[in-house]
Image (cartoon, rainbow, N blue to C red):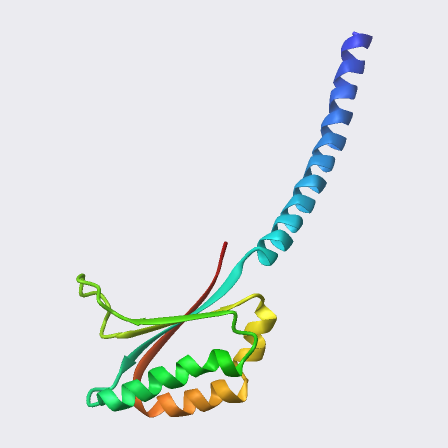
Length: 140
């Protein structure tokens, strides 16, 4: 009976301390993964535009060129690409233009958003936009 009680107490003690230790290690591992993940990842800022009817090709070209000039004006932009929708599915809801702007950190994005060059672009595009959709996400 004494042996059973000692084994039971030993198991309880191990379980309690082992669980707490495992929990601590898991938290540290999660925190480390988050740090490593952020350092090894790129933050994508995706902007989709639906333009007003009557927006001319010339106006669209000016918008495309203006957005394309942002990487040379805002050093926090580490990558940039854009394209026109060509999906055969017909699910684009009249969004025609997709722009991808990439940052190394959320701080880079925080610098970009109020940057004078970005604000200037927003003012340029504003009168022609019927709708805009923005999604940000981390990639590996």
